[in-house]
Length: 337
Image (cartoon, rainbow, N blue to C red; front, top):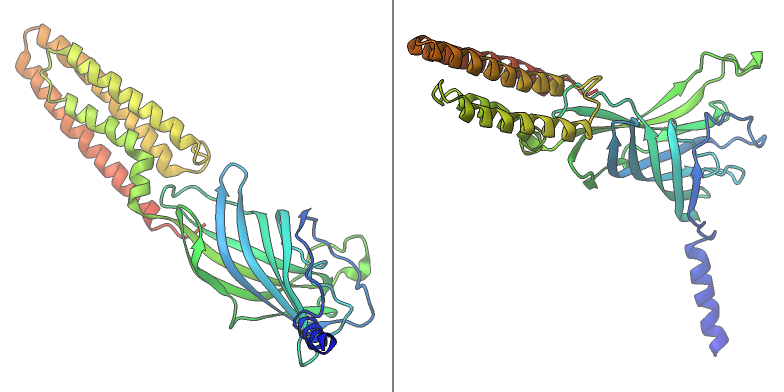
């Protein structure tokens, strides 16, 4: 009796997973990985799909981002190992975990794996903090395309509607297959015409809202407001003006150090560079105007001092607003890098 019950149970379990699921594997990403075909019987067309569920850790100093996605393959034959052939172009590290592996009723092999990869990507911070980045995940076959060709599973491939990307909004998910030919023979003349099938996944990451921009620039905003407020102090009260000048300088310097930890301000972050220069220009203008107006007032020409103070206040404020408006508008309308 017990044997008759156990036998169907064993058959049910064995039919669900024909092959045991492999454990998690963490490896340092290899190079291009091009190699001769491992067998004489090619898998031919291999259907490949990707479900992107996380993009995070955009590192502007190292020019990398971290992507987590599910990838699946469907293929004919038993000589092809998709996990062993997995090559993420430009990846520094890759961690994989097989989640499902089975033989389908039509004889095809099917595998799903979860991949966590840190990928190189040139991140242009010119429009920071309104920057938008086109991030690419590229899966390339290590074998030439007459042995293996990827076919995109475009129907099932998509971006997770609840994708995890703190501080960023993901949109414009695209997936396509291309053939890559390298400008080298890799040392063998017979390889000069070889092409490799590559699946390219693209997604645009953009920073979340104006609130983040205000947080990043709050020190510069306070600095400029303090300078503008200082012009309302009587020109003969240099000590009071100096107090505001000190507070404005501290706010600008503190904000500069904060922004430096977020992006490469010295190279490409044009908006940040203009914000820094404009803030310190406002401080310098306010300081020089205060000293000059106080000297003119002490010389007995108080009306001239007040007039100079008013003109400098209006002129510097108008120039600052125009410059920052132009730079902000250019950053807001910049194309994804």
